Length: 121
Length: 148
Image (cartoon, rainbow over all chains, first blue to last red; front, side):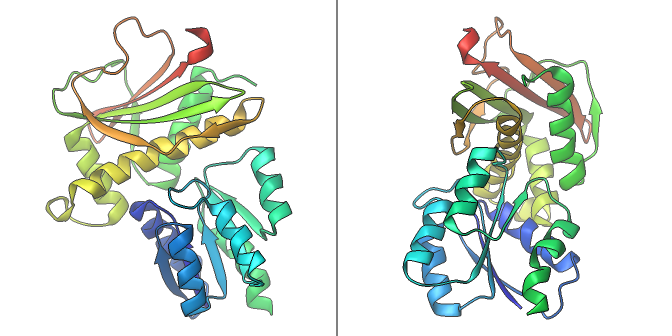
């Protein structure tokens, strides 16, 4: 399974990638991007099975990244991993087509639960 | 809901201990009396207008970054050290924003070097939680700007 991790914080990209590995997802490969613009390019080039994106990023925010992706007809499973956890933000994510919302701080179990639907396909 | 000291401490503990595996011990220190400290701030705007600051000596920031990046301290770049402290304040600020009532937005973290308690001076009247992280102060402050 190929997962693209998008976050402007290199530390957080590493922690998310590490936690994904700890969650026990088989055959996992992670890719990284620093913002939504890089994320769009990485999705086009590498065609990941899932995208895990931060919400608050410079250049292009996570929600705009998701909207651009959907506008282009791409339906890759997309979830947010963010410290933003207000109901308004969650609703905006849902409305734009996000499949899940993982709030920092998180556990490996949160990733496993969120990505299980993909593994079941 | 409003933020009190207990809630702030819980959020700080969840982020630092629960997720990052850093050991925190509550401390009486309310300032960081260091000439070489790092300050990371996020601004929350909207329904709840506030500033959230993480303040810690540089050596603690280096140690935290080493844990977060799983790298030895001498391998870390300045950008990585600042990134680590910035991500802590980002997580704390984001969680606090989710607790209070009303719609607000969270800024990107701003990380810089400070001397002592800057940018809040001695008249600071907001919330402060003080911990020791690996023996050194790790102070988190919340300044509700609607209260002056």
